[in-house]
Figure (cartoon, rainbow, N blue to C red):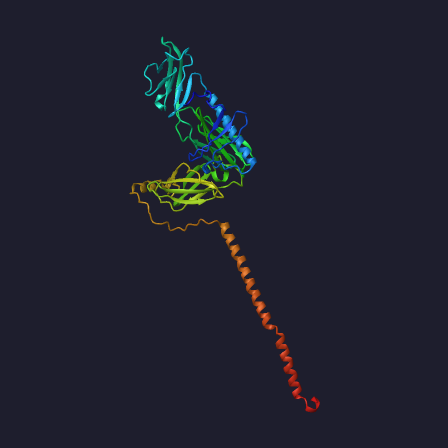
Length: 456
């Protein structure tokens, strides 16, 4: 049986129950014993689902922190529940038994209940000692109820609002720069009850702060002045008069960075170049103006009449399209991403359009010729490939390549020269065995040439 919200608990040892629900819906409930005002975590299986990214505390110190965090969530939930304790309003859960008490009745007999001013009550309701019991109440059973005595005098009126417990919200975060990030969420269950959200974050050194909600943008919050290398754990708690549920999400700036689209996109034809378009743009205003936070860009373009896009990447703030179709209007967009490839590409910028053409300046003397040319049938644009060579290389890059090739050639030449000298010296130097052999043969020849008497 579900007692009126805020009513006494039948448990002789009052306990406040807090919901520790995994992202997959598994119930990891625990309790806090309020009998002696000493919070104790009694979770059944010891941890939450991995999807909530809350791991079991491995050390007593971390366990104490988690108990305090759970106690804080319970306190916030209870405080929020007290905020819905409106006079004459009672909340109930769909599918549970709901009891409406006629507290103003002097006796428990002769009480009549009405709904929305009529005697017709929901099917299956039971009158018990002056109280009205709605077994397994349905959502349609909500309404304004009143109890009257035997004379029809009003004793008490109550507005019954039925709904569901909060589900675990789905949370996503995004950073448009390296100094701030924002998160948004969507509820997973339509509760049909008034709902509030508590949004906080915690960093690794256990620094806790609020994720500030913007009343003008519901279901969003922001964290400002972030530390680049820090990891943040975001807590989004959904609270309604029946209970609460929360989602924990670990956030790193490198993973959620997603710049805003580039701004100031301009496309214009190149004079005397019928197949070229010059495109330029600017950094998004939200990106920090710091040299160590650079962006790279990708450019997509196509003729308006065609469906396939061509794409070019660059680190510059301008680009020349060299393979446009002469005489056809082209649509161009540009996107941005962190230069070191962290995070995700931005959304595409707003479209800009231009038509490549000759772009020649018309003088007054050539006006008649121009008008005559306009009267002739328009020449269909050529779809043949552009014969002009496309050179997207940087002159400094060519110089660097030439220098590298020169150094490499010098190194190879030095090695070859050294090896040649070493081989030549080795061939020039006689070995010790050859020297001894040469001396022995010389002595033998000399002794053979002497007279026998001299030898003896």
